[in-house]
Image (cartoon, rainbow, N blue to C red; front, top):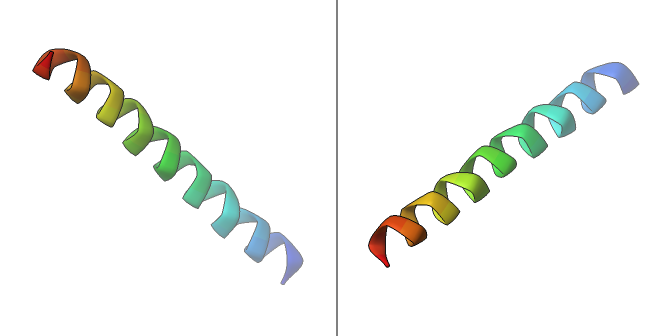
Length: 31
């Protein structure tokens, strides 16, 4: 169960980083 929770947190962090970088690229293109 602990490993399962860790996977969810890891997946969420990965998704958050992807969105974060996408926003940076989107902002730089807008400017």
